[in-house]
Amino acid sequence: MRGVRFVQKVSSTRGFARVAPHVFPALDRAVHRLTRGKVLLSAQLLPGVVLTSTGARSGAPRRTPLACMPEKDGHGWILVGSNFGRPGHPAWSHNLLAHPDAEISWKGRDIPVTARLLEGEERAAAWQAVLAFWPPYAAYQARVDREIRVFRVVRR
Image 1 (cartoon, rainbow, N blue to C red):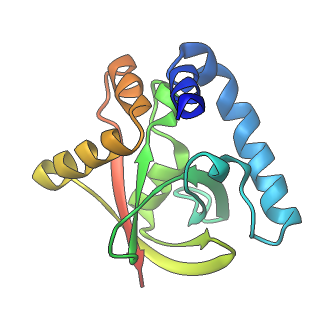
Image 2: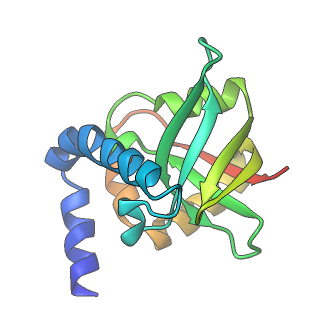
C-alpha cells in the first residue's frame, strides 16, 4: 500500500505531467505490440486498455494506451481525459466525440466498443468513483480550468 501511495503522490506532480505523456504511452505501445496485446506496463499499477479510435480530422486509426476503471458489471470501462493534468483535452477524447465507435484491447482481447461522454449527475457519480479509484485525478482537475472529460465505453 505504501508503494501505491508513493506513486499516487509522484503522479500528482507537475513534473510528472511534463514527462509522463512522452514516456509512458510510447513504452506501453511498444510492450503491447511485442506481447501481442497481452501486457501493458502501466497496467501493473492501474488497469489499462489500448484504445483504437478514428482520428477526428484524419479518419486514420489512432492507438492510445490509457488507464481505465473497469465497471463492476464487467461490460464497460470508464476512461478519464485527464491528459496528466495538462491544459488541453487529449486528442483521443476529440476522436471519441467525433467517432464514438472504437475498439479497446483489454487483457489481450480486442473488443468493439461505443463511447459516450458522461454529463451532469451521471458524470458526477462516475467522477466520485474515479476519485476513489485513483485520487491523483483530483490534483489533475485542480490544475486545469477545463472540466476533465469522462467517458463510458461499452461493448457493441
